[in-house]
Amino acid sequence: MSGQTPPAKHPNQNTHASKKQGGKLSARTAAALVIKEVIVNKQSLASLLPKYSLQVTQAESGLFQALCFGCCRHFYELQHAAHQFLQKPLKPKDQDIMALIMLGILQLSHMRTPAHAAVSATVAGAKQLKKPWANKLINGVLRSYQRQQNNISSTHGTEVIFNHPSWLLAILKTQYPNQWQAIVTANNQHPPMTLRVNQRHIKRDEYLQTLQTNGIEAFATPHSSVGIQLNQPVDVALLPDFADGFVSVQDEAPQLTPALLDLVPGQHVLDACAAPGGKTCHMLEHEPELASMIALDFDSERLQRIKENLSRLKLNAHCIAGDAGKPEDWWNGELFDRILLDAPCSATGVIRRHPDIKLLRHANDIDNLAKLQQQILATLWALLKPGGKLLYATCSVMQQENSQQVAHFLQQTSNASLLNLEVGWGFDTGYGRQLLPTDNSHDGFFYALLQKTNA
Picture 1 (cartoon, rainbow, N blue to C red):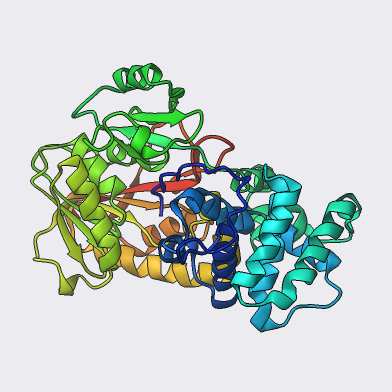
Picture 2: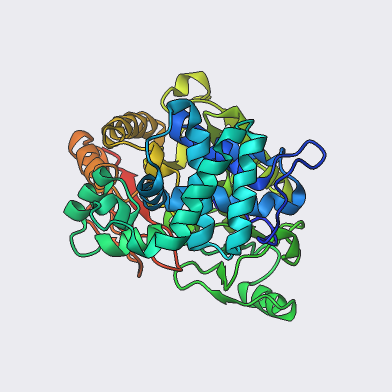
């Protein structure tokens, strides 16, 4: 889950396009339907946005995404504010109206939308939802919020203050007593847009100069030797030579992968759980003379993303739809020199890119994911050559998924040793290095490099 989604073009947020245009939904209506699906049916933004974005005009597509992400990012605060001005709770079937109210408050509190536009366009969304009875209710709540937003009750818990679920806050406070507030603050920020330069085409300094020539301000990332962070996100169509594979959009933290794996010509490499393929492509850019690269993913639809990325970058890998925990269904029996296991995880290191995680994850998910990680790690270990290296990675900050997972594996595996990562980023947990999400810099990520002994 470490890849970045390129930002859409920013629309004029002053638009009143609340009426259907050629059968399309307004951005507010579509966003309300998405948020309802997240709240009621626990669907992710990643699964919902492609479908609902087709129902919105191109002019409002950026606003639609901003509303969806913003509502999830500030959900607990928005929900609390809405409850302050609702005389009675809405029925379960009317959670789309609740979503509209929260979206209205979002525009009034966190977006540049003029107040009259935020109110009138949001109220108009009820008609598209075929619930005109809610017009007066939505208008009343939003007008009350405008007048009294500075007087909202302060008798609320930490969920509202920090816009995180209480179970997650409790874990962060326990595991990172000195850093938890910085983690939470970073999680609630808009993520930066970071690029990975394809050095098969151009050097980083040269591409930085090209960006400057095109009026795009950016700077070199401190830890990745091929990373560039933009001062402001731009549409990928504006990036010079993007279509020709000169750069890809990827956070700095996953860009650290190839350098850790000690890739050399002639190796057989497995990228398990590879979608959307950013690290697969980066490894091939880093070492073009590999004997083979297998990109494995359980989800055949996500596997298509890998193929698209490979095609744009003119790279080759053998893409296989399969379960990393069941190699008997896809493995040809040839041992690998290197394995990258970017394990399925809670994604608590990339909340700012996927703010719906705060609404979809639960405390018991961590236990279940840790068991799955343990099973996949043990299974893939058998596919590694003696002397080979396996890089265990997650985009999580949970110790149970990271350092504790590696410690348990080493206790259970006699022919495994932990290699020291002599790098200048993150901090040493004793069983790998942890990067925490930082404000206007890299995401949260964990790396542990394991080597199979000959014994």
